[in-house]
Length: 204
Image 1 (tube, rainbow, N blue to C red):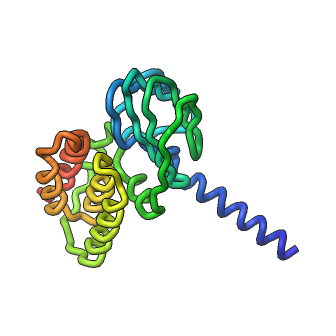
Image 2 (image 1 turned 90 degrees about the horizontal axis):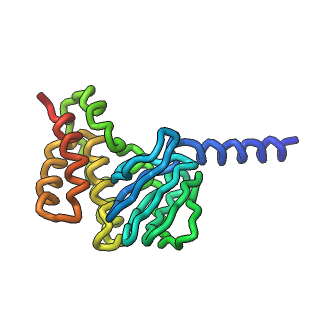
């Protein structure tokens, strides 16, 4: 009986971990023409759009899309002309993805990134920044480790850093990061997404 209880507890834990996020994942980068079909119809896909099981991405010729699954940290990069169906922990397609694995801490932070179109909601809460050296140092350490393992064109480390800085209310530092990224074309979607979030979180 004790063994059965342990098995049941383990199964429950796995179920909880697999469903801890309401969304299956998030699109982190897009190049080219990519559209997405959801329960609400077809629309143009954009970076930082949260994705759900059953969504279908359609990539145009030469398009590229990068996404991360929150349930297991699987990061997929799809290129080419075709359709990709979002699953709960991975995607289905006739195309072949480049796959990598993100650390749980990074995935947890990425999942907290406000989705595309949610900037206004973040501005509802205004909190004065209180310095937290330990949290800031830990975030910097994780960022540097992620940056060292990531391809040069991958903006995931900066998304992780900015999302973390917003969470710990290091608004001045977030502004510095955005200013540094401002002149780099590859980071324009990141800057465009986080600039209003940082502005909304700034003390008034």
